[in-house]
Image (cartoon, rainbow, N blue to C red; front, side, top):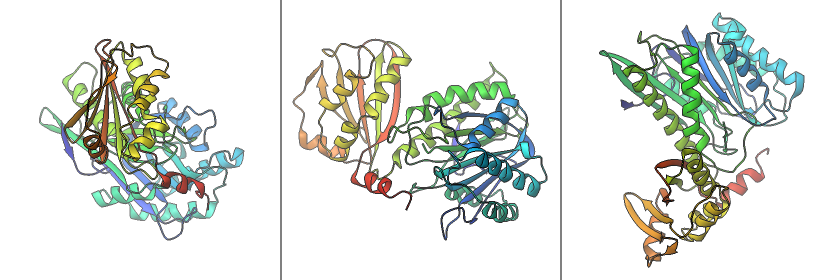
Length: 406
């Protein structure tokens, strides 16, 4: 597998566009389109929040129907959540306007929205955006990047990832984009993600793979423990590479690796770009009894506000990590645990067999000041492991969310 530049336009046959439609923001793009002329198999996972936005209900129905699609239209600024029947009608209207512009059926257009909850979307920006998007469609890297920028809300940077591999000398490409900075605690952040591939694959096999991959990527990140009403992860496969992916083949292994890489890379980018964040935090729970408990341990630490604040303050208050492990709900022997701090290939053993070591506080502070910080929790129970990602908790997080609607 090779990592490559690009996002949703990296795969053969996919185009993207962005537009300044005027949903809520002024003087910036706020609508994006991903399109393939060839019909695409589509798989997806969605928010577990009982309160689901109108586009989530729309997409779930289409994905579960196992019918092919041609496009995904996304808007930022207004989430179209808690908007009742009117919200569902305007969501279908958005799909229909894009469908008309592209010459496809309404049910062949997926939708996604992010932004303020409870506001109604008006028809005017949809009408304006649909025409602008159709005219701006391109298969260039720039078009993909501009689409990623258009779906940003409190994000500070656009998020893209892409990878390719070969099967019998033919290149297959996977590329994606995401947005997410706050309300990031998917159990499958607000999280929207669209991935495209030119692989040929059945709906059932793709859905099975997507559901498995999301468990170790998007579901293992947390910024603020809030699960959004709009979380959506969509994967479109148009088959234009001509390479068919079948279970049990070498191509299947390579495709899963590439799809997993793109999902994990996008997830880490979202965690690093948490609202107000200054550094990425990674938590590895190793030598656990089983995968489930490893995930419980790592997620418990990465979601702890005290641990997040500790990382922001560059204070190696390791007791907070052990405390988070202790209330996780999974059992372990605290008298055998090791805790290691790692950054830029340097390590400091903070705790050995349940008690603190004679480590240097100054050296620990230096490591905690790096852009990415890792805590390795060695539970000494078995062979299973899991990784979770998050970020520090800063003053700016409160500032950003204190006036989000204004």
